[in-house]
Length: 251
Image (tube, rainbow, N blue to C red; front, side):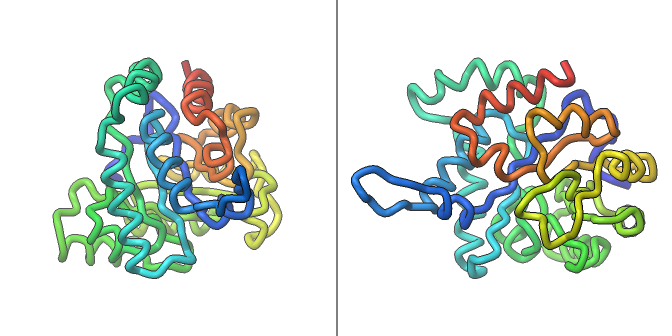
């Protein structure tokens, strides 16, 4: 049985990191080198302060050691209060969108070993990654798995059903809309197929791929429990404002 309830009072919001994408769009004044890693840390801290539910560390270009270092730092950032003026500036946003909810959970893409070693909240697996039932067995052999989440990315109805049978706690489904980061997975699935998959499974399912503030409501109406995105959060000049806007969709 999933550790998450399908009946949620607020949509789950997941920021999926992409440091390489940050580097490609980053600019700096006075010709100073752009520090993508520093900016990524700032984005993780801002997303946590804004009340994003999950942050998935998806940095496929990093070595295991580098990924572990980033995941550990993300766990620390998600758990640490903001200092001084930043704490005051975010207080209203956190009161509005986070009241009664747990703090941001850090998930690690694909690297179960890193997720366990960094004391992250869970691992997110691809369709061709380790099966969720095997991931659960390994986690239980290493640490308490009571609160450890295992999610799976799915690109078809059959894959979603298989992940649910395998013991996944939640699913990502997409790409729902056109997006550069998911071009390798073929044409967008669309809202009709999203709704079909949502009806076919009992797990919380997050829509991913081209999700924006404008089409999030359509994803929720189709039955999604939330949304996951890179650019929606990572490119936002004010992540807290984005989160407040998304929360209002179910208010």
